[in-house]
Length: 383
Image (cartoon, rainbow, N blue to C red; front, side, top):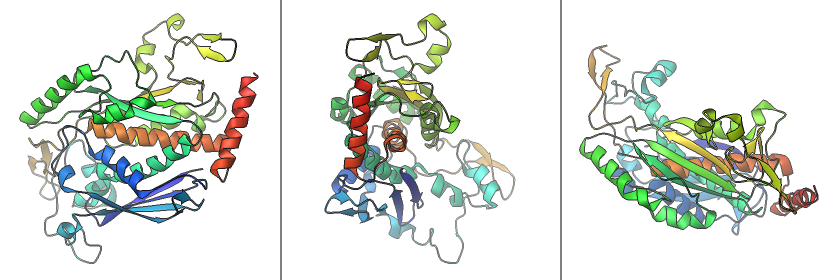
């Protein structure tokens, strides 16, 4: 089963991803990983750093002639800005000449400084930075390559930015990925696109930031992935944890989530029918998950992202050295990173689903995994 480790700081020499448990025989290449990293960097409202930095990556192990070997896959994403930061972020002995002592509200700064007994917020913010999600995007790409091998696709889109929401009546399909990525705000509902961009422009003018909501859908999963037996293997619980691990995510719902809480039971659940060939549901209010397991329909989850905590109008804070009231320091900041957060959410859902697919079906090679999935689908066809 996939096991993932990332290492590196935002302004360090690079980010490292190690993915253990990839079956042999899955197609992987640097160009595909690079394309995935570009998806994460795009989006209306991103800061100037996104234009300055480039993702230079190298596959260090686990892949030969474009196919995984079954050994751990290691990838490094080098920071092209490293020469500018080599002195400040040096791993050698010394100390910073410009320690950051005015932590930002809403960030990991103060709690991390207290936890690790440091008076320099850079010791915390460098790892807490969302730049770390670039390393997760590598793992997400690998996970989605695994899933594609068994006919499973993951797609994401933005459903709200600030107080502007998409209609939400129609759900995107895997074939809509290119159209979504071509939208500056990654909106499937193009009728909301202009209003979302206008909201970002208004926040930028006010020197403020905006959050929003993203949705991720998984197509092609058979019923029964996940568990009703073990609380820590329930698929919806694992997805919620994975999404909440993304920087700035403060809420998650599965299916209709909070809307369902206000409905009577007669209008809350997905009624079952049989079409002569297989079982189906009249609706998908549960988001394709019942009892911690997939029900056979598309898995649908949403994540709510708070506004970025670094604002151009610094918020009130306290200097950890003098204990005097002051303003929080400013690092570079995006106005809105919701479109990018959708891509990262897609990666985390892909990783989680791939792990549960592996847990259920096993296999050291892609062929072994495919055979196990095919046999299970054949059994379900006769149920």
